[in-house]
Length: 480
Image (cartoon, rainbow, N blue to C red; front, side):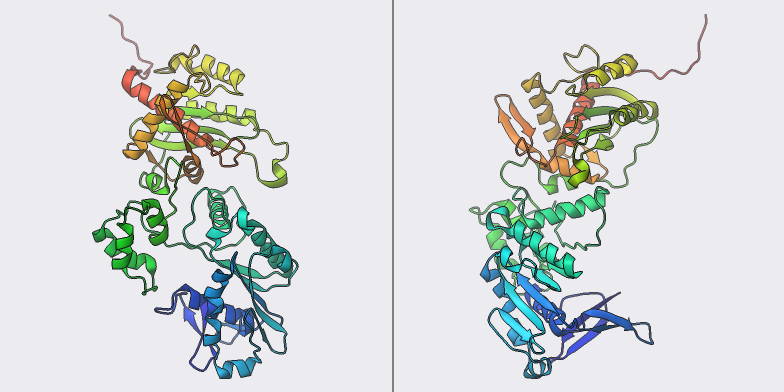
């Protein structure tokens, strides 16, 4: 149950208990302006429980509210609405002193301030609430990262809070909005501690077609109560061939869609997701392995033969922060995971990139190669697949994987780490076709799970096209 405060016609604060929702037709900017006023002089902090068990709020005695953005126009969207929301009674009751960029209340004890990208100017301020406007525009080039870090530092010192609002970001720009989404995904993956943040986004289904018929249904649901946005006008913009489809999806459907050299967008991967998929002991599978030593990730992926469903069996990665200093992958743990896979499932093929793992691959081959249906082309040991030795072979394998994904011939259980690595993959065109890579050599956006998926998919292809089915041993014998 949530509590929400608004202003009545005379400018006094009123509240109601219920599900948080926008006031009909107001849109986000007026709502955020009211929220800033509540944090400014309203009952924004918990005081006690009343006799009915309901919470009672009180104003923060030294409230310092900031409306921040990387340019002046973004703060104006919210700040320009605040004077119209403050009635004469409101101003008199709280002793309001108005200014263009700074509003004071109660003899200067409380402040409401507009701030742009001067992160040095706000460092150390004892803010109690900060509104971060349009964080998809907060990038390194306009010092948006530094502004965000300063706001977070100030909030931490004062044990206060902040709220970020954004449109759909452009993947790869490394905006604050993108970093927040990735941090949220890390928490969902269990790769980061849940710090208590809340994340909410209304996004159209990735398979939504950009047709007038579909958009007339979807657009009213995505716009919410921003009723001034006319679907008919938006449809004209979407159908304008001078504008990219990716831009239209981000702008009007609130979808996180990749541009430029990304191989896949979220919509391509999401339509393959079946959360109820389970890999069961005894299932026939193929395995793909991509290993590293310290900087990149190490990954073990299985694909089930029966339905081409992909599962992550193991993922080892360097922790963020100081814990990652000097980190190296636990090789015995990885080795144990491989043996567990062979002991649990009926492995028909195992394609493992040899880089950094030659000695382990030799042992895996000696133990398991005889029981495999196929081995990689050119492999002497039945397991090793050297991704560095043949650009043509890797490119052909990659094009087969891309076609399977685009044709929806692959399935997955929604593993978030695998999704992240798939969406991190970037186009690398060569003389043989389309290959893949990271966005740059030193990029922290890993693709190792995608590489393991590629190896498993190539093993699946080979089993289906040239593998001979192994008969399961029954232990029974027949004599004539």
